[in-house]
Image 1 (cartoon, rainbow over the protein chains, first blue to last red):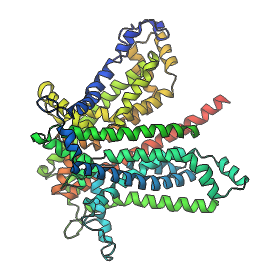
Image 2: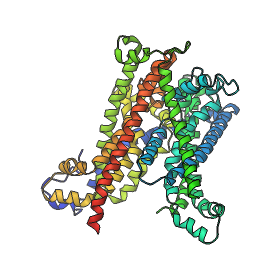
Image 3: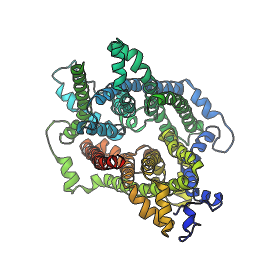
Image 4: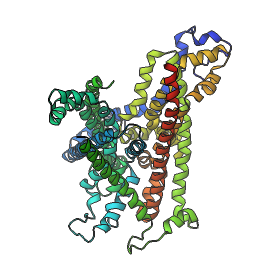
Length: 299
Length: 272
């Protein structure tokens, strides 16, 4: 429990002077690293190794071959475009909301409550969110009933369990996430920059295309990537909406785990998971590069 | 220009508010409306709070109990693990700060659905050789999911205090390390602890992926099952959990804001 078990209570100077050999201090970090090794590092290694090992311990490329099959490649493609689409919608709508929010007086009650609401809804993804949308535009949903007099506008009952429906529901947590991650960047825009543009004879258009736009671009792209990874990893929402077939990768992983006794599926779940790790790793690497650029303008 | 900005702001924020509140309102409406006839009836709420239908709700009760126990376990383990470690690396092993940070933020980049594939064999060993297949042991894995958020909360809390001076002073008065931790540091990072507790609570109560994939029963998997037979109850419980979380988080944020306002003027006058 204590950080440095070897230090006795009366040893008053020990806090200021590193009288102990460094090795003993390192011992204090063992619980943390042991715990994360078992529950974080080990599972990740098991995924990476498991993608190439059959149940009997022999090496196999079965999992990788399965992932390369046209069907699975199609599932990956669906996952990628639905993540890109919802990330794009989230970036545009969330960006506008973040900018609108930055115009309201700083520290006002309304702004605080709205920001807090955004940070909660950004975490909403999941079963309960799916229920909320079923209650809104499902067969007996509130909006569906209100729109019944206008048949042209009434949402199709099967819409929610289609890809379009899943995308719409994803936006509910993508947009707030964008607001949260992008707000610091728009708050960093200084009024002086706009005034300087106007003094030099620039229009609003000049300001956005030549000043604010280039400054915000790295954070904008970075936020897009973050939203992309967020949608790509989401499982619960889709699981609650789609029950028939595996249209996106997380759902396919679920069914692969379920059918693990099927010999033909050896190492398939692990190979799928490894594929997801690779996609997210590329996205996060790009994100790190962009954030480095964005950091120039945020104090 | 100014007037245009104000209109833009009001329209955008108004539309956003409608988009975010309509599904919640729909949940409330759905929970009191009988699906086929559209008649209003409060049966779901009566069943939830009036009792009587124990069978129908036993799964839900089991899930909720498990989730609450796991939330407590996750809070205790994550704080017990992280706070001493973060204190130690800050005071004695500054070169390890980055390593600890990297490990703590790692779960953000590994999707839960990927992690669970690797956790399945780990939990197979836990449930057959070490403990048993009780749902509550999932709390060990939930600690990992909460790690980034707890780390960030504690990090900003520890940044705000002078850890070195506080612990040196306490040590020179003869305090033991546990005393330094529990009676000096903990009271000083109180608000960071509170926010990490709330975040952990929100993550654990909302967790579905691990429990579903490892075939355990928590609040979310129970809701998932109940929705198949009784949508009204599922809607009512979802509304309670979502509404509860929103109220909790917004209140927490306002409390923190008020505290900041109270602290800031005094520190400013100190400086000047």
